[in-house]
Image 1 (cartoon, protein in one colour):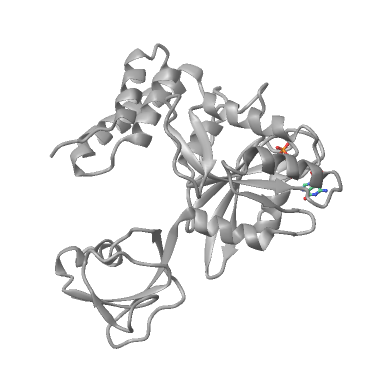
Image 2: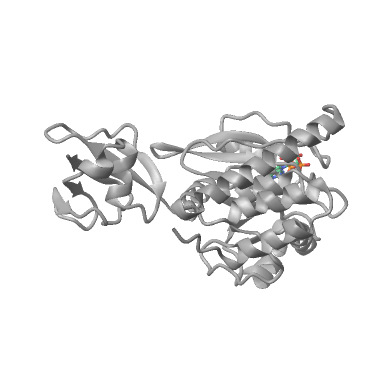
Length: 330
Ligand SMILES: Nc1nc2c(ncn2[C@@H]2O[C@H](COP(=O)(O)OP(=O)(O)OP(=O)(O)O)[C@@H](O)[C@H]2O)c(=O)[nH]1
Ligand SMILES: [Mg+2]
């Protein structure tokens, strides 16, 4: 089966070939893994990359006798993973504490947060994962953050709007992330062309925080003027709660996921625990998630949902929409 490798993958492979240190090799391998097309034709290649990654990590562990710097990853949970990025004191941790059940340290000094902290945000009948991160600055940005941002489904780019230098905050954060080959783009705009060998372009909302401060209003005008074309800009106050409902809705939209409820023929649907899947998922793909036997044994399906008549028969390739109820027949 052809591997159909993309230019991004070829670039990462080239970086691996040119890498001189184990750390560079590991970074390139991580990138190869992130961008390699995931289908049957690349199965062996992916296994091989994984093997090389774990071998390098083992060597690394042995060499440093466990003294290497902290490294973290955050396992995905719920319908999607959204990271909080931004400069120090923007209110990332305060926002996490408002949206989720997590209890981060919040402080009026920079670098309060030193390691990732996830929390689960309820949204209607599902949970979305929000991950608080240390700040991003030109002088110091935790190296392990790049992998976490790259691996996330989307980002919230938080700004302290009471700060007169807010345009600098945006520039510095964006430039620093680009050094780690991550770019942020407005989720409702087209994906930008790859100019710098960017490995991951992340869907983003620019979240203008601290709108309860009087100085924030003028600064908001400035940010809108400069960035309205590039990012959706959402004014909020993590303190007063202003804009947080709108934020939740936009996060759900940005993730581009749908909820599908399943139903056994002759029984009422299970409205408690939907499957949360990427928009574009087909009837056949969902059926296979419900039970692997459906891969072969699915005869037909019926859908109750938006834009369909109740119990409409649909084909395997039909694309599911948010809140569809799906009845599978083997
Ligand atoms: N007025 C106002 N203050 C806020 C708001 N959100 C956060 N703060 C304050 O801003 C300071 C920084 O908040 P944090 O949540 O710790 O900021 P952070 O972005 O997590 O900072 P780092 O962990 O250093 O990156 C704290 O004193 C918060 O109380 C807000 O909406 N309005
Ligand atoms: Mg913090």
